[in-house]
Length: 85
Image 1 (cartoon, rainbow, N blue to C red):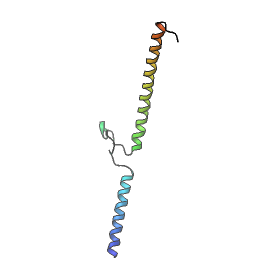
Image 2 (tube, rainbow, N blue to C red):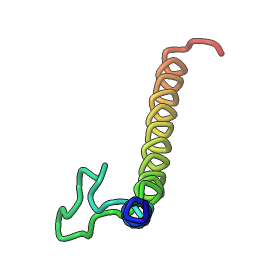
Image 3 (cartoon, rainbow, N blue to C red):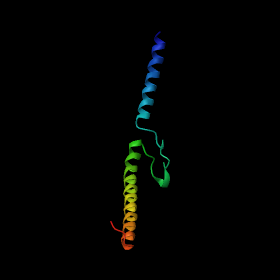
Image 4 (spheres, helix red, strand yellow):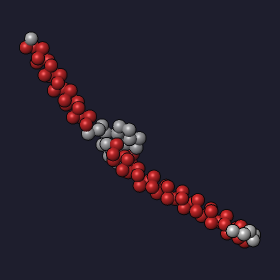
């Protein structure tokens, strides 16, 4: 019976080490650009999300600016043709 407890403690310690190892994330996991250009791989999805947020914001603003420019161009064209409004 004593040997069973020893095995249980070892497996518990092993599981605990695995949990600690995975808690911080694995290098390069879900990071398609891990190591690209000499950059270190991301350690957590939060890092990837934080890096992606400014890119998404910039793309969104650029898209809105393009729509506004097209809209103004259509309005100016219609005004030159003499359309009311």
